[in-house]
Amino acid sequence: MPEIPLVPAHWCFPAHPTSVRRARHAVAESLPHALRPHLGDDLGLVTSELVTNAIRHGACREGEDLIELVLWPADGHYWLAVSDPGTGKPVLAHPDADSENGRGLLLVDSLAAAWTVRPRPVCGTSVIAGLPFRQDG
Image (tube, rainbow, N blue to C red; front, top):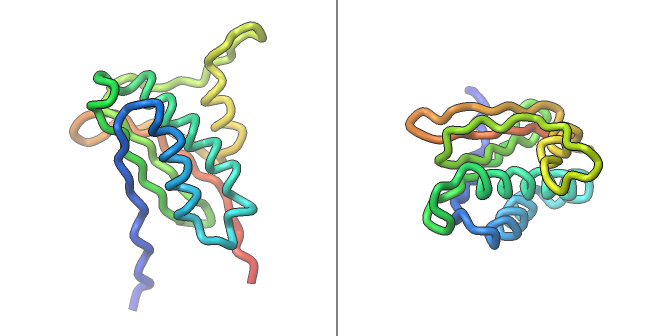
C-alpha cells in the first residue's frame, strides 16, 4: 500500500500589510514542534518576504484581493507557495547600498534550497520556495 502524504496546510489572507504577521504566525504554528528551532526563523523570514511582495506587487485591490499560502513537506524540504492574483513575474534584483527596497528575493534566494515563480492555472502567480529540514530520530 502506498504511503499517504500529509495534507498541505492552506491559508488565505487579505492583501493587507497586517496579513504579513498573521501569515508568518500561521506558518510557524503549523510546523512540528521538533522542527521549529531549526526551521522556524528562516521559514518565518521567507514567509514575510513573499507575502509582503505579494501584497505590494501582486494584489490589485488592497484588502479585497486574497493572498494564498500553501505549506507542505516533501523530499526533505518544507515547501511554501505564496500566490497572488497578479500577472507579474518577480525577479531577483541587486539593489545598490543606498536602496531601501529590493532585497526580499535576495533573502529568499539565500535561505531557500530552491525557489521558482510559476503562473497559476486560472490567474495569478505563485512563488514557491523550499527550505531543507532533517528529522532526528
